[in-house]
Length: 107
Image (cartoon, rainbow, N blue to C red; front, side):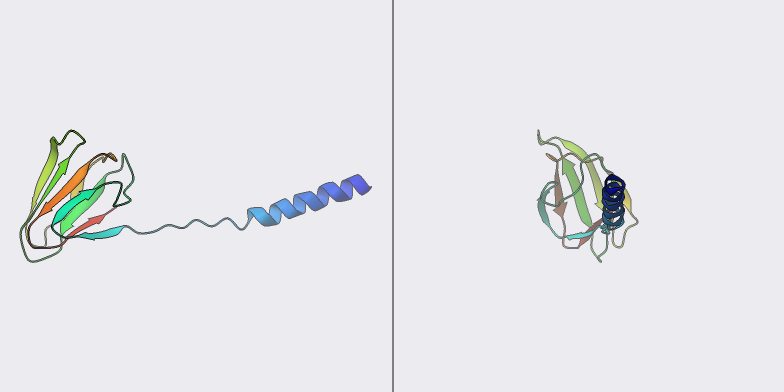
């Protein structure tokens, strides 16, 4: 009887602790101005495709380079442009933003 009570108490304790799992989902909305950015520093996930958009009134250029400084892709972003897919990204990649406006990266 004592053994059954101990087992049931342990199972009850485990069932209460399992219900407290929380998932923190964050929406990705990174604003970038002119500069050179590392994927790791931006805290972007590797092997994930992202969207890039010019959200300002100016023409910007986005260039993605790999670890060997070879251009992997580039986008000319007109004023208030639609979203363009970039990626999949690697941690050694860099993003170069040229132009006076602001560029937004979303998931």
